[in-house]
Image 1: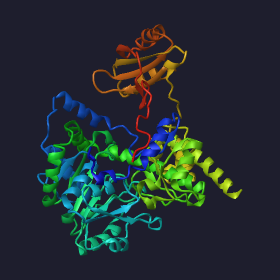
Image 2: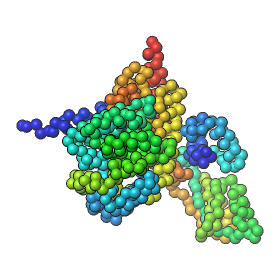
Image 3: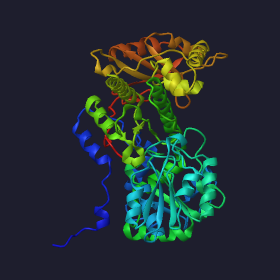
Image 4: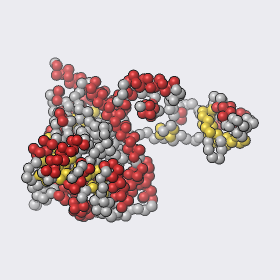
Length: 391
Length: 160
């Protein structure tokens, strides 16, 4: 029989998280700090709207790009949060999570062999999606001393004649890093000068703990070269509803819509009705969840300081990214031993790119009570490691 | 800062003050001072415990009693409310807009005890026109805490 498989798919490495997942699932009593989704339930009024839409029999397809009401609400949100004007009619696509938006944006924009710049550590899907779109992924290794922000120099150094797109993943999973307006202005200059495009993954936009998030698309000259991706998963605790969206210039969105139309048809209808309610009446829920995350974030930063664990202060998403280089073991070894000896699961930084070596991703999408138990165990563990090192 | 302190201790009055300061990103002494000031000003009126008495062997019935009264000249409802809230078995007394005037909640050992209170004491007050007593059969949620179901984390243990 012939080989039924495509080489480029076979060559994609499975996610580094997978292996860990298998060990953790076998441990009944393990505490996990390894989750990349909110611990809150979707606010009830939003769920209720989904249920109501089912009761009303709204179980048909929507138009390919999404419900008109939802697209209008998304445009309203973009106007009030970022001051960016998008046309609901041809500059918004409602997608199956932010993940689909990343995929179709890359596929719509890349010709074979063009380069996509991917800052790492970052979410696991950019590199495989770029490969599947026949792009050449070029990794930019972000540095702890820059608080894992992307600098103009790093960007400039990575650009070649073949560079087409920069993926901009801020606020960042796994580091919790943000890019503030001044940081964005500096890289926007390079982007415009070098005439490249941006896929800005802003799924954590609502979860920042300093100033409000600023989108790169709101800077002069950037709207026309940015695909802005956001969604409902993180802000409204709606991961399972699988709903995201892309906004951008109609010349690009029109082509993305073709892929979406033929591959997906439309995003889930129930979720779209619920999302209208989220955007209309969900601000207070988001505020409350943000406040809860922020309290946990402060607690973790304090606890790390107390135990002398090096960690830059992250101002976004719901992750902290402490450095474990002092213990002289790899992230994976550390996470593996921590899990076996203390039964707490964290994700090794290397799951998000090689430059995550020496770091751990700790999620604070857990109640303070849970975090306290887990941090107590972390303290025991690192004290033991320090003693081992002395001996 | 006050609102933030209050919204946290409303749910967890046993929180360690050092920890409260840490999660709010302020100094511990400021938290201590604010709490003391709010106690003095009567903003913080007590530190109670949520108890699901259903799970204990103690027999308790809770009743909600709608009370219609005649307001008194110059006193409004305050006088009559005071006469009711002074009974220790009365849990709360609210002045209500709508079809009746006061909502009284009451805890007793038994149905009989509660009805005795209503007929002998409450209805006997000369400003009380009528009462309607509702017994609570089951508490699903109280003070923002869901009693009927325990939270379980059903998420996958590791996700990217």
